[in-house]
Length: 189
Image 1: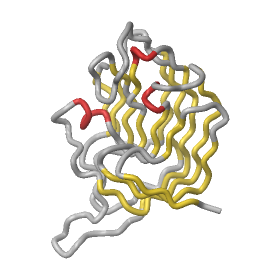
Image 2: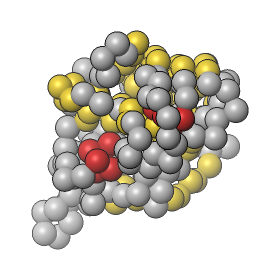
Image 3: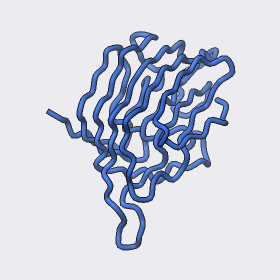
Image 4: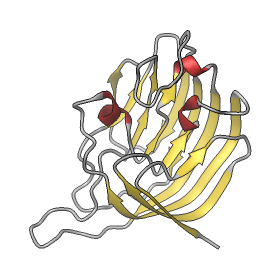
């Protein structure tokens, strides 16, 4: 049976190995991700998260209007994101987010998109002082093996900003996304 999850902040936290979320209905606001991979790298029981699968996310409503590129938080957040805090220690994350569908609610009476979306995804890691980063210490560059596939992105208006991937020097990241996901990979962490 699917669950209906609603939150103005992060909705589905992927923070453990063998995590499975299947057929969830999500409503999401501007303060967090519909799916956050690695839960900021804070408070994890294990530094290695493997075989994590989120399959079948139906985004019924998105009101993600406050996240632009004018601050670190706004640049870091997406419908699916990592927002990893590197000073919290090592993180080795392997996860799939497949079959994400966003309801196409069309336009309102003023021709504005009903679904308000900042960006599809944001794969990033931050040092001390980064958004939502409460740890101090040496930066530990995370290892990511992330797959975002089979997304139905046919919504009126599309996202406000490009999806993001930032690569720290020496990072071991494998990010596999559908060709339809608009991405900007020119940012460093």
